[in-house]
Image (cartoon, rainbow, N blue to C red; front, top):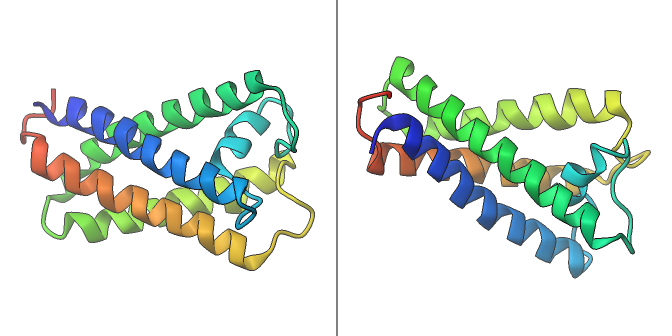
Length: 149
């Protein structure tokens, strides 16, 4: 499988797993900042609050998975240029950068984070991004060829 397809597929699969974990933690009350609520909230410029119509949750999933696929493809191209050595560490760094840009810059500017988010919740979302980057890197290296397209 070429590297772009491997990146897209890895982004999709890992996005589904991380999305399910985030929703589960949100449903049991461990984390208010759910990736799906953030994804659906982009359209309302606020974090989705309970109860919410199923359509907004579906929009959250669609936007979350599109972003996950896009990030997988971007990282596949990056691995082509920065090399595969220590790919999982590079994936963790990529996830951290994505978290900083998404949660540290765009979310506050757009105004769809809670007024004063709990630092533990921000760390949990940070952890999702680290795991995402590490798993995407692993799958791209394991299943993707060095051929880009």
